[in-house]
Amino acid sequence: MSAEIRKKRLTAPDIRARKGATPVVAVTAYNAVMARLVDPYVEIILVGDSLAMVEHGMESTLGVSLELMIAHGRAVMAGAPAALVVVDLPFGSYEAGPAEAFRTAARVMAETGCGAVKLEGGAHMAETIAFLAERGVPVMAHVGLTPQAMNALGGFRTQGHDEEGRAAILADARSVSDAGAFAVVLEGIVEPLAVEITAAIAAPTIGIGAAAACDGQILVLEDMLGLTERPPRFVKRYAELGAAVEKAVGDYAEEVRSRAFPGPEHVYKPRG
Ligand SMILES: Nc1nc(=O)c2c([nH]1)NC[C@@H]1CN(c3ccc(C(=O)N[C@@H](CCC(=O)O)C(=O)O)cc3)CN21
Ligand SMILES: CC(C)C(=O)C(=O)O
Ligand SMILES: [Mg+2]
Image (cartoon, rainbow, N blue to C red; front, side):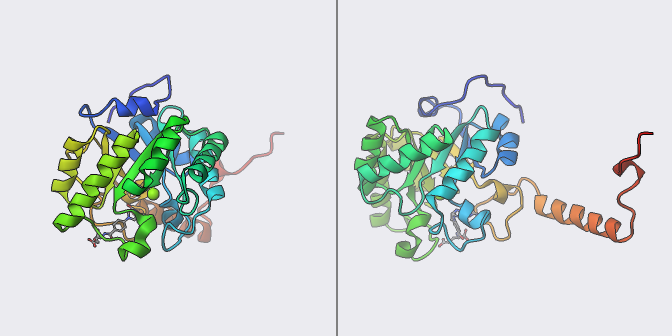
């Protein structure tokens, strides 16, 4: 529960140095209000492209624009003074090659002030990750269940159920770590594989529903707060804010209709 007071903002190298040490705490946030609330308690705030689904009601993460990611990234930077803020590069903004990825990432960093970007993909993204890392862009990688590839994967399906799949994900994790990713998100993979990858690669692993043995954990904030309607099965709900919002707005509506609100203390009185 303790809120550590940090004077200087955390950086990607600070996170890289946490391999095998105290677990890294990461959470998503999409706006300044939530960023301010979570900032004292976490090391990484991810402005995830999951905001397409959680914040904008889209069916997948594929429809989010670079402009929208930048707008949310600026809001989170404004609210969070201490955590490392990482912004997801959206689908279609980086996959064509290292040069496109660099132009996109540089724009995100320049226009938001964030300290790193995240992109999805394994071995096929290694060249891009190295290109960015060598040019001053810290990259968080993301392997396993990569939501931007849902149309190729057949939906949000957990990965690594057969030996071939497990070997491919291990190879992906090795590739992105060797390419210079400062951390690697492991999403939607079976626990023994997450344990094996964590032991095998130099970069800290950040699990989402993967394994307690990972070097850190991440969850979508609205899922853990009980604000999303159908969160993934691996989520632990640490609060029921959805129910709290319904109660508060229901009470407000009732008091407005009965004229119990506003009371004398909630209106302006003439001074004279
Ligand atoms: N609210 C929210 N939370 C997330 O963690 C999240 C998003 N949205 N959107 C982008 C991706 C998609 N994610 C998801 C979404 C659904 C499942 C899911 O339903 N998984 C099934 C298992 C399916 C299978 O094994 O084939 C489950 O029952 O948990 C998993 C990850 C994680 N990310
Ligand atoms: C769930 C995390 C890892 C993510 O990529 C997102 O929120 O978009
Ligand atoms: Mg994402």
